[in-house]
Image (cartoon, rainbow, N blue to C red; front, side, top):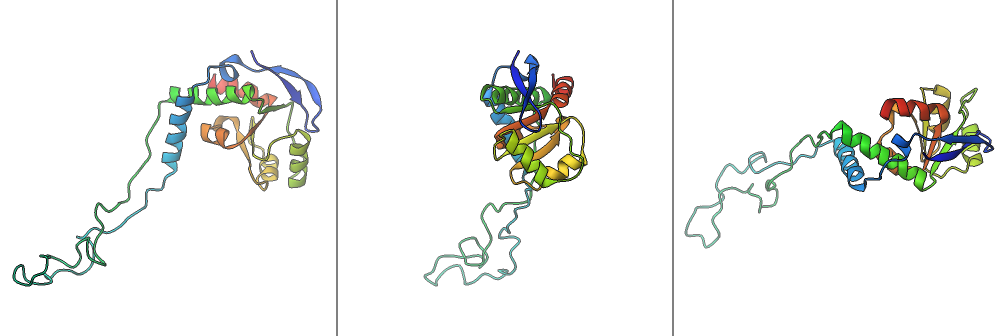
Length: 207
């Protein structure tokens, strides 16, 4: 069972915590992580790209010249793809790129990443994270005190407007409730900052 140091918001050590083996001590499966990240990126695609085929381009109804006898190549329309202003061959059309990945695969990828954060010492556990008011300055002070990386993923146990609004103006920092943790965001951020309460809730939700 992984054991890590617990800090307060001033960066002082206040004890240790045994992280659940089922979440933070599983086998790291890189292929599963790749598949889930690929799925998340595909689901983000808008799929709105569109171009016109020769059937949709305006004009070109008349045959430009007769079939034979001119010495030129035969042409049926000035809107064929080889003409300037003509249609596009195999023109892209709006489509939906999203697809689903089994829940077990998504869970396995999340556990792999959480384990890698522990192995690479990129996880910071806080005893609590409370702000009396919305203050970006205080949020920056906390990140500096706990030596968080420039890109930090802050995970809390329940929605907190003061925490969310204090951290959202800091470039590279994202705050999420533990239920909304996802693989792509974990990869995108170097430091994982999680509260003790969020660790317990994560065990209930994901383990």
